[in-house]
Each structure stands twice: as C-alpha cells, then as structure tokens.
Length: 142
Length: 112
Image (cartoon, rainbow over all chains, first blue to last red; front, side):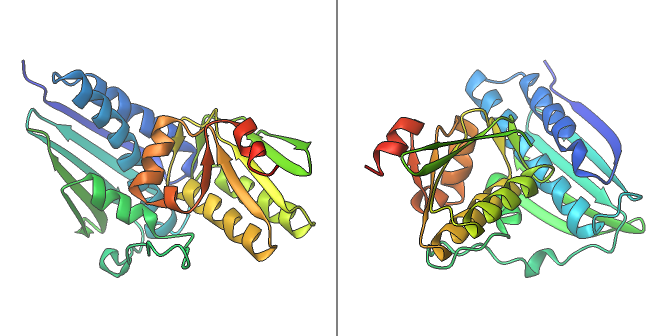
C-alpha cells in the first residue's frame, strides 16, 4: 500500500496555530503504513519538527508580524519525509545559529530550536524562495 | 496560562494546568518565575504532570527560571515529566542540569 501524503496549508504568522499544525503532523504520521513503534516515534518527532520550524518562521523570519503568513508543505512517501516551511519575511541566517553549549555553567535560554531540528531530521536547509524563504527538512524513513 | 500555586514546608510548588508549554504560552510562566524569585521566593518545584508537549521555547523558559533561582541563591526542581518532555530534555541534555523527580512528594522530600 502506498503511503504518499501531500499536505499544503497556509496560516497567519502567529503562535496560536502551533497546536493545530503540531496535531496535524501527529495525525499524518499515525496514518503511515509502517511498524507501530516507528509510527509513534515519527508522530512525536513530526509534531516537534513542525512546531520548531514554525516558531522560527513566525518569530525570526517574519519578525512576529501577524500580517504575514506561513505556508507549510508536508510530503510523506514510503521512503522519505519532506517538510517545507515558507515565510515571507526578512529571513534569518541559519548557519549563524550556534548549537547550545552543553556546559551546565553556561546555560543559554535560546538556540535549542535549530539544534533540535538538526538532531531529528537528516538535512535542514534554509534558502530564498519566491520572494521569501523556505526551511526545507528531509528525513529518510526506510 | 493556568498555574496552580501551593506552599508546603517553605517550598513553592507550581502545578502547570496546561497540556502544552510552547512558544504560544511559555512567556507567562517565564514572567511568573521571575516575579516569584524577585519577590524573595527561594525554592520552587514545577510540576509538569499535565504537560504532554514541550518545545524549545518551553525549555528556554525553564532554563530562565533555573538561572533566576541561581541568582537568588535558591533552587528550581522539576517533577512528573511525561515521555515527550523527558525526550526533549534528553535530546538537549537538560536532564543533566535540572534535579528531576517522578513526583512532587519526592521533590519535596529532597528539601528535608
């Protein structure tokens, strides 16, 4: 049975939609035709990935401007997961976000979002697209 | 954000009555923690029993509270981490920073 799912959704750039999109990600993963354990861990991971990606788009790329929008595309096949989050803001420099220090003497409050994305997904890229930017994240499923 | 606050044996306990701690609501907890420590509270336990989902903003607020506690020569401990929250702590290695307990009673016990 083919697993191909394609979701395309646009929301206002506001954190009130994090719950809705996170839950959508959980539900998409729950429908995949794969072993239960894999489904459950993917469900959890996809919710986190979507939330972290959205927060970056809303707070950093769109600079918390509620008149902007965020466009989300989720593509799942048997072999791959592809999540793309498009913002139409000024963007931010992904490569300049350092990993958080694991030295407990130096506790930063920020910076864990990108680290989490890079830990959960195989590749994370951020580039210009159609007058805005896209955060593109891929993960091999098989 | 719905937070229930109780006191016991000189320790302040915050019970977070929400199922998410994320970028949409975490600033409220941050403000509450800052207010508590600024007004002389020393020892705080945050019970996360009802939190089923945490993101990096939620983690950041707990870190902020931890730093407020340290600055005030106090403590911030956590209890009842559910599985997604535990995973996020382990992924970001914050489980090595915080004192984490399986129940509020165990956290209180650590002060006796």
